[in-house]
Length: 55
Image (tube, rainbow, N blue to C red):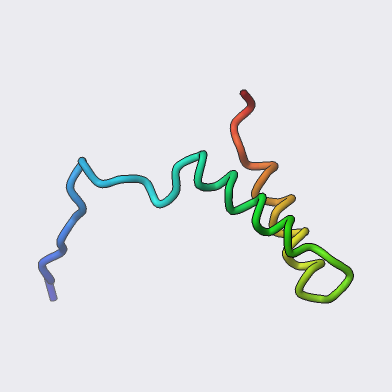
């Protein structure tokens, strides 16, 4: 069963730019606190920040 697959064109933007990813981390850190959701936000921010390229 072959299906036609629409592949993205080469001119599509990445899912996130580095600047956008940094803004997301800053926002997550804003919500970090001692609640379960706040701890999860902090952990996610730390995990994402570790994946940033070194400047």
